[in-house]
View 1 (tube, rainbow, N blue to C red):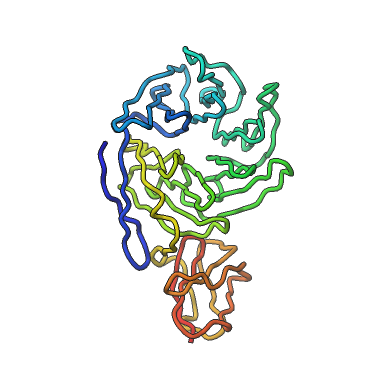
View 2: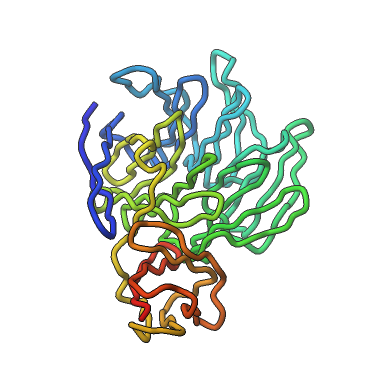
Length: 338
């Protein structure tokens, strides 16, 4: 395996993050899933599904399925592998305990997938909907219509999904059907995953992976990958973040321990203007973006304030004199309270 160091872009310093390439020279891989030591992944143009043993120090890809359609998503749960294909849209179900891996038709939709309470949820971007498939009866029903989902992850019984049509992260309560916007201004999200402490999002067009703290989804750090690597389909295996680099044809991993327990900032975004600066009373936000919440940190990284923005104005009259960092989603600007 090839190992290299990549730099996290921070406001005050540089932190090195070790990225290890697990497989190279792949053809249009874009999605990953994990089950019983095996990582399963697709080859879109090759119309193939592969797997490799993650526990091995030098894994090799094993072809397990040749399809007639182009697979775009894979998802494994409870001894079954689900494969979504295009042209036409279909989802197959494969019993991983069998010897021949024969695909069985499951649904006439395809896209990102996750399982909650025994039901499989499938998003279909072109039809702007999320579908629930009862895995006992195979009956399918529309859960959410009018949204274009790109990537899924599930946590504590909730469905989180991104839409590159709105560049937002949503949280769907599948029991009550209530929908909440969690993050705005994502940069073409191409894979999401989370654990108790952190949320990770691949942003393919920028070749970055952004990390947010939980439960407040505050931006923490950004990993800059090589230009045009196009990170995709991220998963967590233990303390490793595993992801595809589609254009460079790799599956790679990096440890997540370095992201825990500290807060860092990205460099100032020139498209966001904070004024007047300095100010003793109110600062105003002028930007092409729309922000709903803000955070104010001191220069030691301590969170001072986490509130909702009203009319692009933030009162700072209660702050002590000094310099602060204003976070708007993952964008930062410094200001001086006088």
